[in-house]
Image (spheres, rainbow, N blue to C red):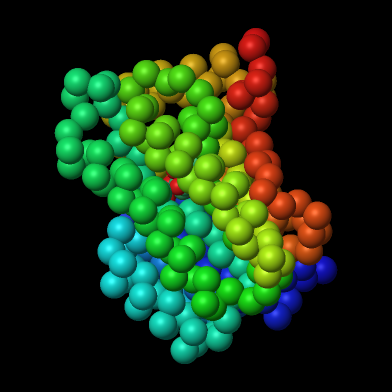
Amino acid sequence: MSKLQGKVALVTGGNSGIGLATAKEFHAQGAKVVISGRNRETLAVVEKELGEGVLTVPSNVSKLSDIDELMAQTKATFGNLDILFVNAGIVIQGMLGKVTEEDFDAVINTNFKGAFFTIQKALPLLNDGASIIINGSINAHMAIPGSSIYSASKAAIHSLSRSLSSELIERGIRVNTITIGPTETPILGSFSPEQYAAFKQHIGQRSPVKRLGTSEEIAKVALFLASSDSSFVVGSEIYAEGGMLFNRL
Ligand SMILES: NC(=O)c1ccc[n+]([C@@H]2O[C@H](COP(=O)([O-])OP(=O)(O)OC[C@H]3O[C@@H](n4cnc5c(N)ncnc54)[C@H](OP(=O)(O)O)[C@@H]3O)[C@@H](O)[C@H]2O)c1
């Protein structure tokens, strides 16, 4: 059954990892999908793979003029939006003394400022009753050395999600967060092979499910929040993290 027939969805960072799997899931469920990202090559690959009902737009979420252009192209091609997946994000790790102003600005401008202005500029396009899904992280709730700016950027959007859920529900627009745990995606490519092996081993020991998640598993949660199946879910967090956050194994 197609859960999103007749709907229009926008996925920022829909050309890789969790965003890509979610864009595919939304499309398979009948939605027209707008996919943004900076990398024109991967955008072209997705557009070719998915075919009809897809618009890809090169767009940097940390540039407000790019977001304006993204919304203008969305409006011109598919009209208004029913679903917005605020997903684009980056990770930069580093202990406090090593973090540079460039690192700080890159993470905050992408993960927080980018999310904020994506939602603000999507607002005129969002139909009453639309669903906004924020890509959050267990890092927002954890104390992880070397993750201060990334974790703070995610904590900021968890807070934003709660504030906006109360502000936008007047129009029936639901805002919810997926609190995501370690998931196998290209974002982990910033690790060296040794760091990556150590990380996987750590997750294997620490996680109740003893593995990383997959992008497809997160996409199924996004589908639930995007569809009317979650019509009573407002301002919530859904934990998709293999039980890691609250389990002290
Ligand atoms: N993987 C995990 O373990 C995990 C856990 C918790 C939360 N998350 C969150 O999940 C989201 C997706 O990450 P992922 O794991 O799927 O990694 P990914 O495969 O690296 O995807 C990141 C996406 O964000 C886009 N992006 C990055 N900076 C952008 C910018 N300035 N403007 C527009 N798009 C931008 C990238 O496209 P371009 O490079 O083409 O711009 C890419 O499509 C992120 O917000 C991340 O924080 C991931």
